[in-house]
Amino acid sequence: MSGMLQARAVGEDTFEADYLIETPLDPARVADVMAGEQSSGTFVRVANESDALRARSRASVLRVEELEAAARPSLPNAWLERQGTPGPWRRARITLSFPLANIEANLPTLAATVAGNLYDLGEVTGMRLLSLRLPASYRARFELPRHGVAGTRALTEVKDRPMIGTIIKPNVGLSAAETAALVRELCEAGVDFIKDDEVCANPAHAPLAERVRAVMSEVRRYRERSGRPVMVAFNITDDLDAMRRHAELVEREGGGCVMASINWCGFSAIQSLRRATPLVLHAHRNGYGMMSRDPALGMSFQAYQTLWRLSGVDHMHVHGLAGKFAQSDAEVIESARDCATPLAAGCDDAVLPAFSSGQWAGTVQATFDAVRSTDLLFMSGGGILAHPDGPAAGVTSVRQAWAAVQAGTPLPVYAEHMPELRRALAFFGGRA
Image (cartoon, rainbow, N blue to C red; front, top):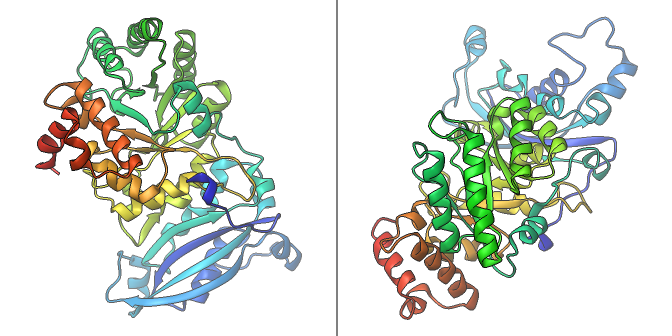
């Protein structure tokens, strides 16, 4: 997947941002307001805003492409109501160019520039950040993934197929000892990757320090017996000082991966965590739906993942095909391709797309057909743990499904001689 995708080059002194806007005003005028508000201007030109300052610091409008108008405003707007401004509600795709000198290598300020007060502008009833394009020299000033796809493959020793993962279930409630026992069972079942659920970080019934020691003891013993490594992503989401301590503990115990709920930790914390730990950094995007589900508001995944990849994460969630969440298959596919696309021309900075949410052996065919690659993490919680013949059969069924699609064999045909896959298709198929 990553080898086929390329980033579009931009100028070395600027970067570009694409937006979808909705407004009853002239879209070109609104684009100009946006460019001013997010660089050197405000609602009126001030005394010190000289022509020379504007020339070097003001964002510029590169393109305005008007689209079909909306029948009604997508969002309420008290400013327009006070103005008595009626429709029609014009929509346009616009591109702004921002001077890099305004921002420098400052990720929170980059985010504030492209996704800050724009959402509150009185001129609009819709505002969505669609995509970002960065010059290679600017991308190089930020963190790269420490491991990415190749590093994760090396640590898990998985070649020529996807990495098969699962999630600790129940999400919360298990003690440290019970979690470790489940991890032992999952290791024996043949899984490559195990992660905590995002709502289980440092609970009273399973303190993280106790859980890490108990789980890694089982993982080390399993590797000694089998010679096979299993990667565990411990959820270390917390304040920054605590996350550093948690990551150090995971590293001391021989772990290879930590997970964080990136939206709630923030850009600065994740950047600092990246600099502090050599471990694989698994980025969980929970909460992204509130930024993305309304088509007239928030941001699309291309822009979202661009910002987060600048913090140096190694894995990013993209949800799953035919899954339990609201995103369309097309959105999931596009998100996976975004993860595999360099952020700038010539950069080797792809991250591993993590497919999850309602995944099981029966969703493998759609996943492979969509991405035509095995450079991915395929995570199945209930699809493994709820297999009628147990977790080992669940893991085997997913592996069998991937073997079938890679061989070009329909799942029902392959399942004729594979009882674990056959049972999965019968059990989960009626629930799909």
